[in-house]
Figure: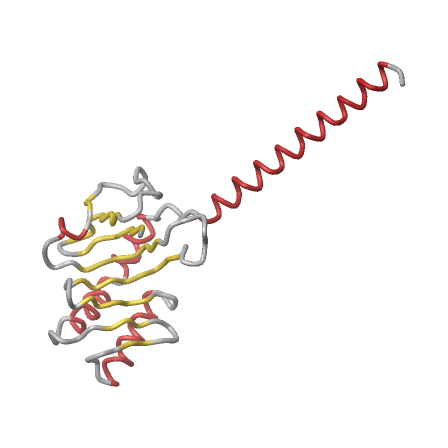
Length: 178
């Protein structure tokens, strides 16, 4: 075999190795990026809150009517301990006017009402679980999360953090990574 043929074969093998490595790196990077949570869209959350403020207040009023009420209500499921059938129907209707896919959770222990608009990561081995939404927190805000001025600079990979962006008295946009 001539030296020029060997050089061509080695060059071809080198090019193929570079292509394989580049492809593998791109696939790995895409897989990791697709499993990471999106940066919360604070403008969209704020606009939703401002446009539907009366509905948020009505749902907050329903949630805090009775000290024993705790619930999780979504489009197709409900764990509505303490809500009457009429309250459940009204709550589900009001929630659907904010966002048909939202989930509403009343955490009686912590006295926090959470509107979850996005969430994920629970089935992905390469990323954390996360959720994005709006919360009503009547007390001890600093114990619940870290107050920030914008979501643009938060670390989306920092597990165990709740970031809170103030909207109004007791109302916050939130991003949680757990």
